[in-house]
Length: 366
Figure 1 (cartoon, rainbow, N blue to C red):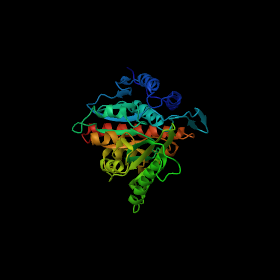
Figure 2: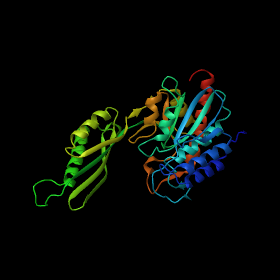
Figure 3: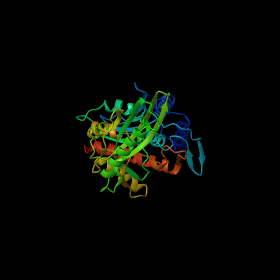
Figure 4: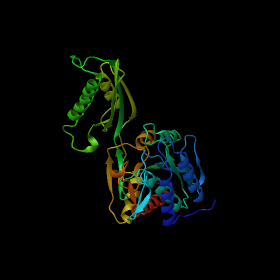
């Protein structure tokens, strides 16, 4: 298949079209098929939808792999797609179809690649607690034979490199009990749930007392609280999310959370350990060099959320960063938008990084 090196106009058209295809977590099929079609039109090898719904394709014929792992799903919510003041608005423009489209274009532009194969993956269900797409890809390599490097497609800003993410733990709380008289001395189910939340929040405050950096704190959030009664029984359900620093063991914390539940049912799920990548790698150096060539010094950042880095980092142990255009403060918001000049700058940075890695592979340095 002939190689196509997309122009800036084609790159913008790709992003616009991809953002216009809805792809909420669990409903990514149409967007994955579109991404595969676009990779085919750019001359990718073996572009297709894999067994779990990921959009995949590769360029280059080298014996070792670089994995560009983006995600194609979005959180719910419709943000009308439009261009305003040089920016593209739309759900997923920042998180994370912008980074994924930048990867797709950069891999096509980086050719010819003689020493590496670059695999681009638009993973499904990153925004869900399952991370089904990333787990499927993670199982295709081992820690003994990992990719040469992996870039996670997440918004960092075109001149910043993310090297760490917090961990995560989700708590589903459910308490059902017979209705008591409101004048009685006992606590009702909603009051018990509030007491449980207060215990979690108090534990986090005590844990965080001597911690100043956001990446080092334990952060609870009350995501949902609902109560109901049929006249005989009262029911309360609650979901709590916790963001975990590196030194918190999710298993130990889970045991503590269960011990506070009394007669409520507590289910723990969505568990991810925090992860910090090594910044002293050829991959990180290649990014810093490419960002400097684009006119900025570049810097490393640690994020307080989670990403597919939490999945593949521990599994592979290879050089790893997260990178992509966009302001992550706009993730999941009604104002989600991506400046197109930043998107194009990120494509140029990624293209240089891939060419540098290919040269290093040819010299036996990766």
